[in-house]
Amino acid sequence: MKVTTKRKKREFNDDNKMFFAGVRYRLLLFIHLRHRLLPLASVSSACLLVLVFATYCLISPPGILHNPQLRHYVSFDNGLEMESKFDVETVFRVPERGGNPDHDLWSSSQSKFYFGCSKASDKFQIANEKTQPNRYLLIVTSGGLNQQRTGITDAVVVAYILNATLIVPKLDQNSYWKDSSNFDQIFDVEWFISFLSKEVKIVKELPAKAGKVTIPSMRVPRKCNVKCYLNRVLPVLNKRHVLQLSKFDYRLSNRLDKDLQKLRCRVNYHALKFTDPIREMGKKLVERMRMKTNHFIALHLRFEPDMLAFSGCYYGGGEKERMELGEIRKRWKTLRKPNPDKGRRHGRCPLSPEEIGLVLRALGYGSDVHLYVASGEIYGGEETLAPLKALFPNFHTKETIATQEELAPFITFSSRMAALDFIVCDESDVFVTNNNGNMARMLAGRRRYFGHKPTVRPNAKKLYKLFLNRNNMTWDEFSSSVRTYQIGFMGEPNEWKPGMGEFHENPSSCICEDSEAMASKIPALHQQTHDGHRKGTKNMIQGIVGANGEHGFENEKKDYVGSTKDSGDSTEELASEDEQEWFDTDYAEDLIILPGKDVSHETYLDGNLSGKTDHPEVEEFFSD
Image (cartoon, rainbow, N blue to C red; front, side, top):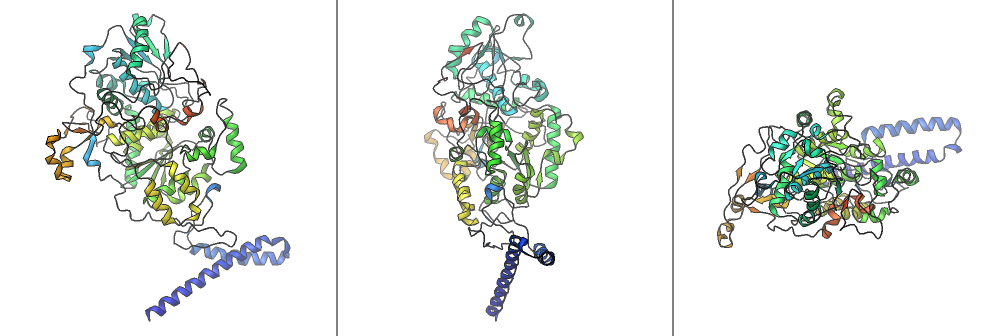
């Protein structure tokens, strides 16, 4: 009896599908032949068909929207799959729910075994012991907020290497980002100076006597190591006593001894604290997201027209896209001829909003998840965002959760607006990015240091092939492949070997293993004392960040110290500078080197960095 009932129900459903498929086909056929029909018949038939079609639409949930590049499939959230007579490709159904993954989507199961550690060793000299009274170092940063942050961090380390007094760094006010903010309008300058007072002497401006001399300006090569600074920069500093280093971004090697790496971490994760107005507004934004949901994802979405034009990538918009982006691309005279396919194959093209949405759904995040999006102008506007919003209707930005009056003090300053997004992304339960820019890198490293919070970095090389062939597979096949390809790109401990990538995104020297917690997981570790391993104790530094923490939130960021094992054991990072190139260079840097010019061993005093144009927008374009 039950079998008969099920068979009848299945036959009824099949009849319904055939009926509605026939209605849709007739509607398409009517449109195609509308000019051959009599006017009166056309009007009557149109009214009838529209009425029937409207009734069907009311009882059938809408499918996911797609941009021109991604229109390869039809999707209905209720699982109904239909194949048009005009499109016989495999149907690719995107479910409304995220599924049931075999792990917690909002935390890392391994994070409790590791923690950030940046305490200096006993052999680390303090400022009073080593700073020379007649050496002053000035730094001019480059790019947007996060690129400048790398420069500020490295400037402190360089001042320590040169035994010099550091003048509070000057921010870039002339690049693409056009932000007139000074250091003390972005960062708490008093905290910066006092926190680092034992490591490096820092003053707000040159002493009057030192300021009377003409200040020489110098640009050092990228990835300049300790020997490079001592051999090339120190002689000039000794002779002139005051020296300015310009365009100071990524001018310090990844390969430093452990104490210098830990100094980097103390600067980046503790000394650089945003000003009170920025932290207070950032706190409001986070609280408003928490009022909406217990967990939320923050997405850093770079899809501006200028960025896409600069990258040379193609997103399926046809001749219109090629012409629009091609015209913008003419701004940079030295760019190579674009090769979109090669860029995609090498993982250098940012994922589109829909692609990043599909990745999140494949990883298990359903349509009920709240999404905070940090972005600038999106190429294609709402049409480009529509698929992402269809996948995640709970779509928020700082503009939607804050009033115009609240944002007024920040809205005309790109770095201050970026700082607000930085805070929300840092505090999110899951951070995801569609690009490999500096904000993505800085947040990836920061989230590792403060507890390995889930951080999704798309494996663009592998995902490219998957997106290319997705119309030939089912959703289950697609989602399974995404989860496989993303292993090693989710912010878990030990995903990368020490030294891989920029130090700011993989601060391995500042990540320690909690031996006590690890021993409780693996009892055998108790027996390994003959190898020199000792049970470690994890202690919190009280007062190292202060009552306000990094952003002034109630949940303070803590720095841990103790006799624990560093996850990056070697004082020399394992990967060479050349091996890191794919990970640590911005797209801009790869595109503007002039053919046949080797600039890796050149230092320029009072001049430009040979081999690169000095267009203000080029080097900084991908800085955030």
